[in-house]
Image (cartoon, rainbow, N blue to C red; front, side, top):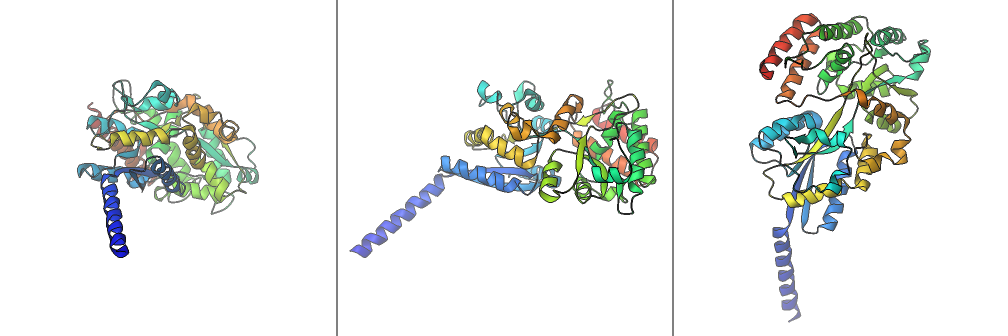
Length: 410
């Protein structure tokens, strides 16, 4: 009798378990990989969410940035995308035009909107509707190696590109394995690295008449500057084989005098090269005093074809509470997108972050126009051709501008 009872109870338990699994809601979240901390952070958020929602099964997929857009494109075309995903905000207009991203306004209360600095929320607002929430925000500034500066006899941080070129040559002369200026030449943001000088020379990515600004004196001067740095040995050799992370690694190894990148390098230095003596300064200015930093937001979006939109929103609501925002922002080394987080001592009293924050008034964002990723790719190809010495600046940039104008419809 007892055996029969046990078997019956076990069968009932198995049936209940199977029923529970059948009714569990699966929430899939695609996450861009910022660092080795990204995956563990989101798994921790998922565990907290599942504890509060026993009927939810949150599946986190971490994808490297360099292949994220390709993966999303493939998943979307096969109707196999997740419910939520981090994206580059610059991709959002194409997602909205194609009906891929779901508007979030029906879920957002005034109190929820007040969690954000408006400047970081606004890039995801299109035609009066909000399609994304700012997952990460950063600007760009110049890191410099104080030890190499001292060894090269450089007393002042370069304030102009001419001063940077002079300082870079002095630093490179310290040794064959030392580069005065770390120049990115491949993969994501290769175009952006070119824009730093381009903006300093007064360039605009899209002119007032709606055409590309690459085929202007600002474009030619910026390209000539970078090529002269390469030719004079003021950069690392083989520039076009170095992506952003490669250049950052050289800097952490003490082999680069100056480079331009995001706030998260400070966190990496603290973890991986704590003895490195470095500083953070403004990106150099051009001859007329112009300068520009790249303002970046990454957004998390809900897909229009998600079958679990209410559950997805509840996950977003948790993700953007002060506690979890503080943990993410501090761990990854980004600028706070939330006022309450910004007031915390680890951000308000951080000297490196203050330098980035001071540059925000000069921040330029990628234009919110369809086809921007293709335009960025054309620009990257053109500057790579120049860096390799396979075309003169004007020839390469004129050709790139002509292609871009075809996309812009001009």
